[in-house]
Length: 177
Image (cartoon, rainbow, N blue to C red):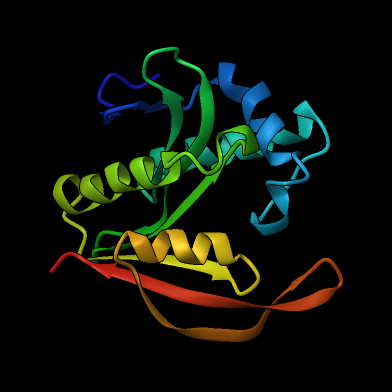
């Protein structure tokens, strides 16, 4: 656990460093049939989920991103994870990502947590651009990211192979200016 990890708090949330004790919660989210359709990875065991834990740790170690465990501030309950990857200090840009356990959907938690990540991106990391890649079928995420001020820059048609078919991905961006 890093002593200089940039923990964030909002009105209802605590965004803290992901630790090994979060493995069961990460597995619960990234194996959940309602979470995984639009997330890039899924896992079928705790052991397999260790790959995601290793990825989170490598982002920090290599300086290519940072992900937070998103928890309820009052209870400490783990509700999801969010953060930045593909961070380029040279180009002052990163990709934002997020997932939430379904029992917390529709309560404004994603907006609240993502705003804290955005604020840290521009103020703490001095980024100029944050990108979000959203599958064309994920209309809830499209609405959510647009509410945060992200602009749709276009669609990459049939750019990824997933579940036996090509999918299209929309590119959203938010600039610091």
